[in-house]
Image 1 (cartoon, chains in turn orange, green):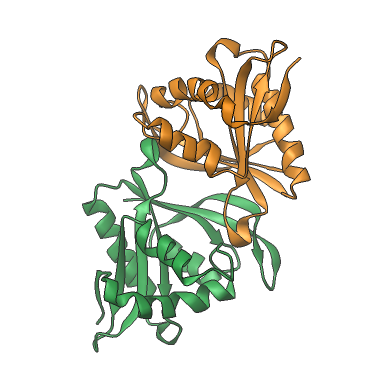
Image 2 (image 1 turned 135 degrees about the vertical axis):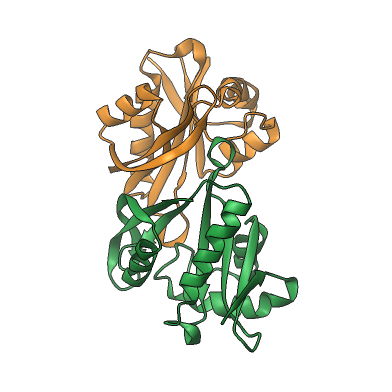
Length: 162
Length: 162
């Protein structure tokens, strides 16, 4: 069983350890692969409305996600989330549980829908997971992502009404 | 004939006069309708890679657009633009000329495509114009925009390879 709770400042070193290899690999998120720790903190912690961590039964942090409005003003009723699971904890349903949690949090915070803007088409595990959780592909952006191995690949806009 | 050139600091009061009524109306851009002049400056001038103005034959500014990467990192080869024409100068093809200009600038700056993330479906003039200029709807976000008169309306993701 995992526990999902709000991020606390003291969590940052572990959260950064989880995020850093994913951003460095550059295969799933459109951030510069040489992004700094400070810039990552801004993106993952400061800018979002809230950030959460998932802990395993030993209170070890094994995942994190953020929640924020996807657009300002007249578009702020749709939220956006980003999820990362620690490499050693993958394949155990952590992302799925974080996604479920984020949907409940989003509803509690008054959001009407959730949107992912750039789901990399080669990240087939993520695409399959979001579909299984009720998201649908509402758009396909041709060659939107410069993949380090596969070159220019399509990205999906995925959406779920909450 | 209009002339399109880079924004200069001394243009701001006129550019703000052109933008303000559009943001206050809240029918086409997803910014808070009570947005401040300072926040608008950040969005339209500071954050983009470049901002331009369109002048009429008397050197009066009648339109403005910005150009920026639509995503960071592995998504920064697709650009995004926003265009606004002064109310008194609409219906004269100014937006079309700014869009043509922005595509040339984007190519010169190395972008491979242009993407609009939130074209409000009720803004039929804009949808028709972008289509006529070679953009296609690559996504439809259900009820993505809270229109002051029409309530929740769909928004389109529009895209053109350059």
